[in-house]
Length: 448
Image (tube, rainbow, N blue to C red):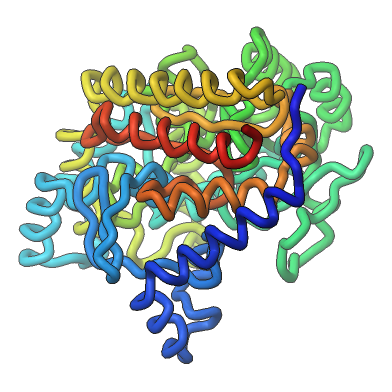
């Protein structure tokens, strides 16, 4: 199998970097004059794009956006699922504008909240719901309730998982020990005190870990996404459910990213049976929101906890959680977006994208791979990984940066943390074709 010549890669990266600088003078000037923002950006992940400075947004609509230099891009990142429904969705914008004129937050329930909870039950199958402002918060709250309900101190996650900025989940396995994931800043305690870790697709390892008897809950994505798409092997998720029940461990499924599998996420598509369920950003159509659901049995116990005298200092809630504006946005999103017929369209596009990528690297004899999960797909510079550790070991930062920058310079934006594309109902086959062509051209420059 062929490999990429590193000298050639470095030379091409220099050319693409200069092209980026030459064609984005206004974004460059913005970066040079921005002194009050740390790193020149309002949030550190915005600095993770390739190039010496970040692009600056002018406007976004549907499946595209324009930067302040006037360049238009096919957006295959979509705010890392935050804009999976498409940018500036008309019905969501109208609902938010209408609610904003009637009051954004009063710390009181609204009819929209009841409608949303009923719709979430219909889609995902869990009968009881509460809200937060992000999936990170929803995960935090779910972990607290799981420990309180079971009386056990630890949580279990997959190696190289991602569940937002939750301290207990920013971990990796080091042999049989739990350690902080590289880059995790200032962990409040040794994560070995709070968390156990198991490899994805490792049934025997799951049995060993849960035999300790100190795990309250297992928090999972049905497929790993943030370290790249790692799919479950046949029977793995059924084994997870069976083994967690055997050991009295609550199963929490986080579908913040895996909602790309369909209107009810992997939970509905694959007939999963979680005790608790978390979802975030996507259901808000761009407005911050998180939600967590639970079975009737867990709901009874959570309600008992919430009625206790100490609930004001429980570490669960937030004055903006479940606010009127967010609930209006979610209602509009779930009414007009993330619908079955839309997923038919977006999955077809993801399949076409996958086939285009595969054809290009196979023609060059490269030992690469591509994975698809519903309306999301991603390519790797290695065979398909089986675990998060396999995926992490295969990361090629230099090649990642080149492929991203090459794409940006030709009007395509991929998700910055990996080589992933996500499709909205506003994308068309022509958008896929643009990516397929520039991807093929990149490989021509690299190896032909």
